[in-house]
Amino acid sequence: MESIRMLLTVAAQEGWLVHHMDVKSAFPNGKLKEEVYVWQPPGLSLQGTKGSFKWWASEHDMYMQGSAKLHVVVGIYVDDLIITGMNPADIGAFKEEMCRLFWMSDLGLLSYYLRIEVKKGQNTITLGQAVYVKKLLEKAGMMACKPISTPMEVRLKLSTKSTTPEVDVTMYRSLVGSLRYLVHTSPDIAFVVGYVSHFMEKPWQEHLVAVKHLLRYITGTVDYGIVYSKLLSGDNRLMSYSDSDWGGDADEWRSTAGMIFFLGRLPVTWQYQKQKLVALSTYEAEYVAGVAGACQAMWLI
View: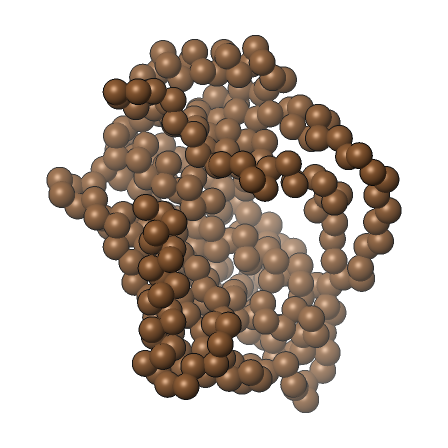
């Protein structure tokens, strides 16, 4: 998803149109060589068979066609193609060639992609998930709840050990899993979603309360989104910010770190994760977060 956001950032800056195609024959051609027997674990949903995505694991997700001047840029996520470029004729020729070689669906200008709404303005491209959020709130039975201004209570500490009642693990995992997908367009909830994800194995009532607190927050941000627009001259530097707590995990005393990258003033990628080691000081926790940010920067460059 990071590469797709980068592609849309470039398209917004250059004023390019963005097209969408779908490969209908992606999975029928990915034949398995062995029989597969599947047992579904309680509380989990199946996303595909053993080999469904293995054919894509080593593939690049961004391709460029052209030489002296860039003609066509294609972003790929499994069987979805996002196509943009400076010359509409080149884009049309590329789409015709793809339809000739593969069984394709030409979905026209990009408007909806992997449950993400894409709106093209005069000089902007906006990403949002309003429809997805409304369905999530309806599933949680919280369509009519009163919104609040923060995604989590200040200084909230949760543990895997609790004296509160247990909750339905399938329901909890479903809500948190849906919230994890919402992070693609909502960096403001990344920390909280990562935090409540730590309790997926055995959630208690206090964990569900934190999830419902977050749902009340997104009730007031349904129509929010990320707006990509043309950058000002000289404002195209890649900048990152990182932060961490120290020993914030109440069970393992590990620190948590978060980072976000901007191209100029446009956010392109962000993440939150628990650090793999136990930092012995705030300085060490911040250093580990900075190193993780540097590794992400090298990948983006």
